[in-house]
Structure formats: C-alpha cells, structure tokens
Image (cartoon, rainbow over all chains, first blue to last red; front, side):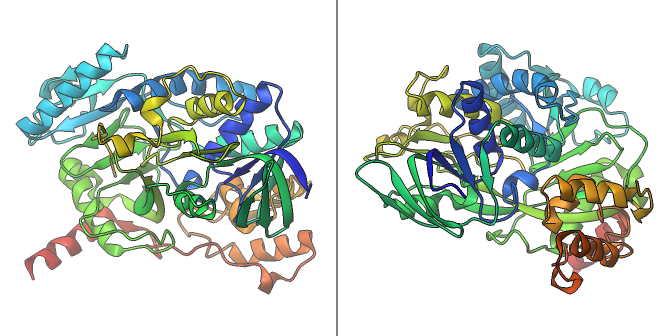
Length: 380
Length: 93
C-alpha cells in the first residue's frame, strides 16, 4: 500500500466509489479507498436495488432526480450493465390518512419537476392485474423510478477506478486516525497512511469513524431483512410499496421477486443474523396482495442495514473544526439511489468548488438548529 | 477454456470463476456476488466444496481455510403459503 495520498476515502460502498469516480472524472485520482471487509461489504452489496425520486423532502427529491438521469448513462460509461429498468414505483395507500400523505408528497414532487401522478384504484388494478386491490384506495406512481442490480455497478466502478490509478485496499480496517498539522495519519491493517484529506463514507460505521476524529456523527445502523423468490414469468412491472407496513416488492430481469417489509420488533445491527419471523411476516403480506403466489417458493433471505440519521435525510458536510475532513453518510436506506448525486456533491466540496445543490440542508448544523424536515417515506 | 459447470443452479463455470479470481477478487463473498455462484435453489449445497477447492487452488491456499459463504434461511426453498400458514398458527396461540 502507498504511504501518502491526497485523499483517503474510508469505506468502499457505493458512496466512496461514486465520490472517487466523480473526482477521477475531474482529474483528481490520487485517492486510496480503505475497506475493512471485501468490496462494498456493508449495505451497498445487500440492498434491493430500488431507485426512486418519490420522497417527502426536497433534500432527497433533488438528489434522486439528478441521480436517475446519471444512472441512465453510467452503464455505458463504466462498460458494465447493471440492468437499470425504469418500470416505475407504485406507492399504495390503504387508508385516507395514507392517501392524503401521498397527495402531499406528490404535490412537493411535482413542484420539484417530477411527473408523479395520483392513481385511483381502477388504474392501479390495471397496472398490476395480479394484485388483489380490495383494501387499496389509491396510490402514487412515477414512471422514471425503477430498479437496478447493485453488483455490476459496484464492480464496474471499482474496475474503472483501478484502471485510472485509484487504490482500493480491501481487508484494510482503519483502526485510528490522528489529525496532524497538515493532513491525517491513518493507522490501518496494512500500515500507516498519510492523507491530505479524508472522507468518512463508512455507512453503518460512520459514527464510529467520527468517534476516531472526536466528532459526533448522529447516525446509527439498523438491520433490515430482504428476500428473493424463485424466478417466475414476468407479471409485475412497477416496484410495489404499501405504506401501511413498509412492504415493497419488485420483479427482477430473470423473473425473481425481491422484497422486504418493516419488522415490528427492534432490529439490532447484526447484519448476519436472520429471523424466520421476517420470512413468515413477508410471506403473509405477499399472499394477502397476491394470492396466486401462495405456491411460489422463497429461495433466500438476507440482511443489511440502514444508516439512520435523525431526520432520515443524508449528511453531506465538512467535519466541523477539522480542515480537510469530510463526511457523507446517514442515507437512512436511500444511499444507493442517490449515490451519483452524492458523488458529484462531495467531489465539488472536496475540490473546494460549489456543489450543484444547496449545501445547508445536508449539513450537520441542522440538527442543532432544531428545524429539521423528516423524510417520511423510509420503506422496508 | 474450461466450461465445466461448478454451480448447476446458476450456470457458473470453472472459467468464469477463474476469470473473477484473475481480476483480483479472491474473497469468496466477492466471487459469489460477481458470478452468482451458490445463490440458486440449492443455495450452494452442491457446489460450495468444489468452489472452495478451486479458490484454494487458484490462490495457493488450503480449501479448509477458505471460509464458507454466509448461510441464510430457508435451507431449502419454501412456499410463501407454508410460511404464511405458520404465521397464522402462531398468531392463534
């Protein structure tokens, strides 16, 4: 491993890779990405691949809208097909309260240039003929939302970055960081690395990394589970989300169903733990909406986590009081879908330029001011 | 060129595994994610030992020292209907 770099990125998840890619595109490639496990071994290689701009805060909407445009081009740029399919996201309401919260969200989304529409029960039934709509009273739908396959994007980024001289060090845990007169010394599993600047992109571990710098990052990891079924003939075009219980399900390009649901019990943060309660809960929900799937088999269940911030919006900022230290975390389950915009945002900040987005709403200071707008559409 | 199948569920060949390893992915979890090995209906029960031996051979280590991929439920594919029936039974207790 090199012993000096301009920028050390802690974490090889989609955030670290996207920021490095945006920087390399601007001619800044003197970067080492430090990863404690294997490539993208945290939440990035465990997520369901959903990509949507239907959110309830402007903060998430603008980043997601920008990102969806980028995802459309990234596959060709990286020469890696990650199967980005824009079949839309359908949010389903089963009570008047849910319906009015969707109406408010759609209003905000339309004000921010998204073509989201409210659908009545008949339109939903037409869009998803296999779904039993007995409890459904309406929903919202945006055609440009969709699903991608995370692995080819992650490995596409990694191979592109390596070919441009960016070092990606896996099995290279950062044990401590000390701020020097100029830059930082990082004590890692592969030796000491001096970096002029550092970016904390450690996802579920970002508050621990913050701790090494003596800075409080107010996020914490929460475990979520997800499952995949055996493949079926195509029948489900949009990603379905029900607001009542945070259930979501999409059908992949090979016909498999991928889905999750909000679990009632406290989740903990051990991503290697599985629960059969989850399998029972999601199966019941699937059958209540799609009785014909009763004899479809669940093939595998797995776990990952959301790095939750207090308002479920991302934290993209300089680390206060430490010149040259940056943090990008707290996506609260939406990191993958907004990663291209986060890459652009942080690459500008790191290079001392103005990001193409307002910076204050993503800053750490917002938590002290008490004026936070909470993202309500945290699903799964 | 070795087109022999290692993973019969996901159609992963010796050649594809070697290609991933040659690209620098020597961790068994990386190779699983790149090739899809062991993620089909048998969940790796048929291929995991051959997979480990092959990784060991290519990386100059011993098969028993290559970790297993994470084991996840269900151990065999189970119908949504069976899971849901269990949920219903427990709900009644």
